[in-house]
Length: 477
Image (cartoon, rainbow, N blue to C red):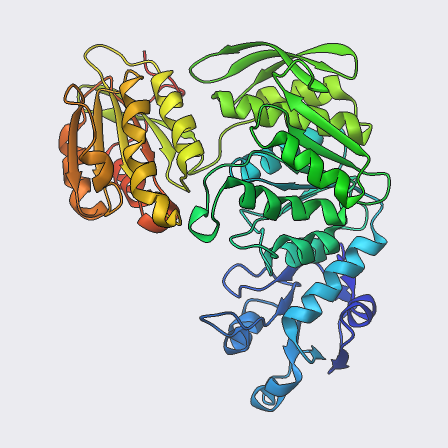
């Protein structure tokens, strides 16, 4: 078993005291007893809904190498015989372990934020940089006050690159996280109307995202989307923070990493980009114009890291979309296949636009239609009704044939759609499920999109459960 931390180093990092017979070390770190692997340390974090100390016994049964517990909880854990590191506060101990992991690392560190594209860009960086070195990156969307220190604490000492996603709902949330991560490169993907319910306008969102510049290492770089309407504002914030090396990517003629050619296909894209003074061709394995933007950021970051850009570009060909973020399934109806595009993980106006354009570019077959299945975009506050209704113009400009909707906020779109678009609206996701199943016919392309909290992933699960995977690959013929 390779050790992530020796027990001695972890005790020193957390500032805790050892209790019981300590093992040589631990192979990993977990805060969830259900996914904990034998030999890992279990940090008993107290969350909003649950307290990790209540799952200490389950963690031991799962094979935890040691527990990290709060001093105040020790009396209640007295009957447990597992080795422990006792600390005043478990989350603070995890943060200390994260800071220690960062201090011992020689990796090139990249941090990513933005209103949309954070996770997709982080995953693209993980995938592409793996072609040129050992990469550590955050799992899922571990981008908040516990996810970032957990990802840091899990960082192996010998990795070459580490990629961190940093998110926020409110001002002031990014600053403490990025000061732990201390990236050499900070990427801002795009400023858009996400979490607009907590901000007055997009400029305020840009200011909150710009907190990521505060942690950039001396001599490090900021990488911005030159095609973003808030580019100049972000550049101003970066320079005011003291970052001299502000770089950009995009189609804009002044972008440092510039898109020269782009051909969008149904299941991939072909591009040529000017990176570091040379033209680099690349095939991008996941489809969509927004994914092309992410790929430019990856190639730009690779150049700034000193990585071999052509090798990184070649690796983009085998990149695939993740579950809930554009992943495709070809499902077999009784008389022919359909294409399902799973965009159910999250939604805001920018990502909704990208998903609808992705559906528009997806081929249909025979009498098939393009069907958009749309649920509420959350956290838009007073802007919600206007932004939902505004999707009607976008849909009307595409080849979308059918729109199925659910959720209280989507009623605004249902009342605004042009008459030429066939549509159905239901109050909730469960009521919409039967409508969706009855609507489908062979040759259809179906895109399912909503904020995660609406539960549209249940529609994806229902389709996959009802209809078997088509015997072909990814595209019906």
